[in-house]
Length: 455
Image (tube, rainbow, N blue to C red; front, side):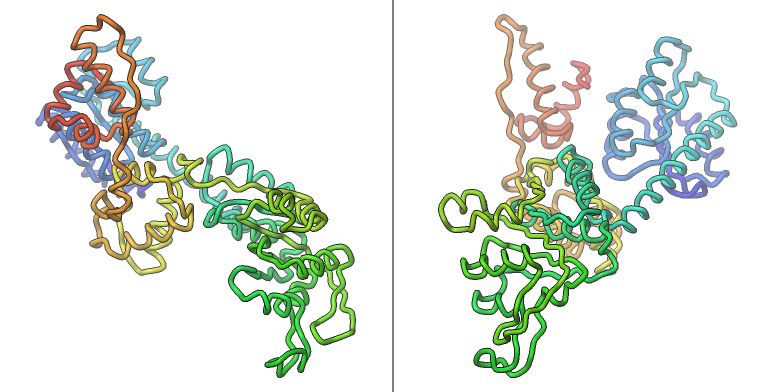
């Protein structure tokens, strides 16, 4: 939310005289007020920026006030909405309040009362933001801040992290490439009693097989050709802390046996050395390969597999938790702006809808890279929009309409109403995408939506 002196208000009213009165009153008190005179224009403005308050006629032309309120709350759940009408209607007022309106006022308006309602709404938004900021700081303190998402699958992962972290248990994290297995490992470490000790990483797929053993256990000078000095391995570096072994499925059979010994006895020898070293290391392993299937195929040791998966965390792919994409997009836009010294005014709903229809084979990592590229290439100031989305994503993200059931004997007007309504749902209520999918003009679509009262 903006500060009070900069709170953004969208005013939707057909009466220019009343609009001037409201705008003059609120602007004199430090508000930023935009005025439009019909529902279609209001809908488009709500798509292009976030407002702190919406003041709208109930029976505004083209898109009525109740629908505008739903759209506004979808963009900003805490927005202060005031519905205004010519005549009092108790039942309608109750329904409006039930759906989230702050007030229902009849003309002529009491402008002082109107501002008091807006102040109450802004006060609530401040409280929500303060609570959100407190939670964000706590999450950063306990290192869950980089795990972004509110889907049921991710909430389960958060719960697992909090329950597992305080223990000494070895953890196996499974998931596709790019889902954020390293962030989960870091979160487990930072929520554990070992948080002040080292968190050491090794990606088994990023270095040659011949070097993995030296990286894990270290070596002494002369242990092999090129070993001119003693090197400390990752297990020693992680003593009293956590070792994160990424892509553990790439370990050779010989290394699997040595790793099992370390897990069982916390002891090993450097390459070329007969002196046994003892360490206290918690191991977190991750893999994008099906280790259980590899065990059955004889490609991975059965005893090591069960020693690694004392606790198992399955990380969902991004395409199975699409509801998290808007949160991730917002997070990555802000992160990319900060990292690249760019100023971007968010991202439009149409662009987010397009990103949500893409399958993201590279998961969260791919989304992060795409958003950073969009931020870098965008013209400053304006929100990111559909044309900023890379062409290969636009090409495969055209909404596909599934099967629609039409009752036998339905009138043609009813057929049109059903087809347009269902297509609007598929297109996420993006009118441009809906019109394109149906092969009709945007003006025709607006007329049909009004004619059939589609919401």
